Amino acid sequence: MERKAFTVLSLREQPQLLKVAAQWFHSKWQIPCQAYEDSMQECITSTAFIPQWYVILDSSGTIIAGAGLIANDFHERKELTPNVCALYVENAWRGNGYARTLLDHIRREAGSEGLSRLYLITDHTVFYEVCGWEYLSLIREDSGDSIRMYTAKTL
Image (cartoon, rainbow, N blue to C red; front, top):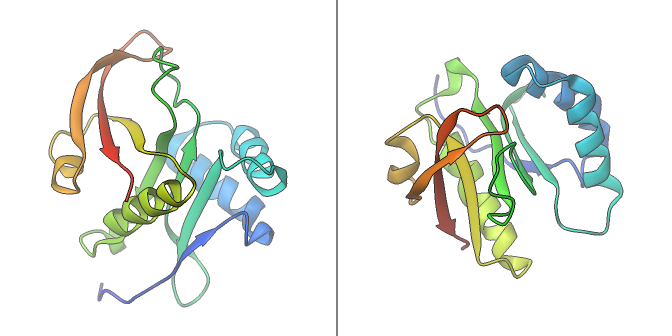
């Protein structure tokens, strides 16, 4: 699929996308749709910066990529906050820089809010390093499994 310049949209600024975005993230990560709706509603109504939710739409208005920024992504290291979560790009749109676009957008927005560092957990070993993230350590998820944690300075 040819890369086109699409804008990263914040659900805080586009609250009409809440239901469709919650359903889209649920379909990718199998976290209950209501959990996404609750977090997105907090994003829209809260004066606090966290949580934040972002999507990229194609020219027909369909979500092709998205990510969130939340306090904790279901792991034991509660002091390592905030966490980028639920980053996903539809298969047909992969390889076009949309994941990096989302990550950089989130890093810039967090930096403009005075945050200096972000974290994320993932099973991927190379992708985030290519995008400027540094491996921090293995941490334990709430489920008890170990997972890789990465960190990056805000932009």
